[in-house]
Length: 140
Image 1 (cartoon, rainbow, N blue to C red):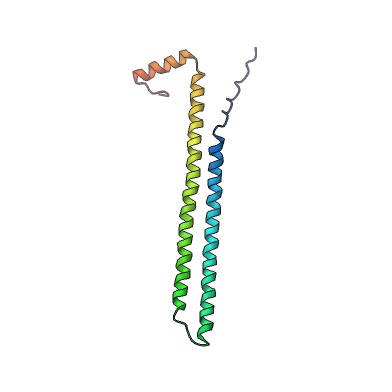
Image 2: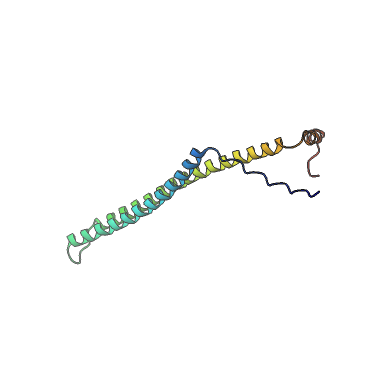
């Protein structure tokens, strides 16, 4: 009589679809937030360059307006602050989405382990229980 190979265990059904959707939305939001932060930073630098050009033309040829340095400082500072804050916020959103997915993976693996252990014959479970009670470590 030919014995059949045991079928691989079925993957447990996925649960908590709403949490998975929320995790994906958080990651998409993080990517959009980061990209918009980079865009706003670039626009801030561009706006600063435009302000400097207008100040220079208002001062006249060969003269430097005293507020040019302030415009440059403000544009660069604004760009850096926006870039840093949007990056930090994007990282928090991305990490929150990943944390949700990790918790869901832990739940799936725990459920799969319980289902696997529930399928073991009672004799094996009793033997493992006795071995653990004696202090024996499985696999040694």
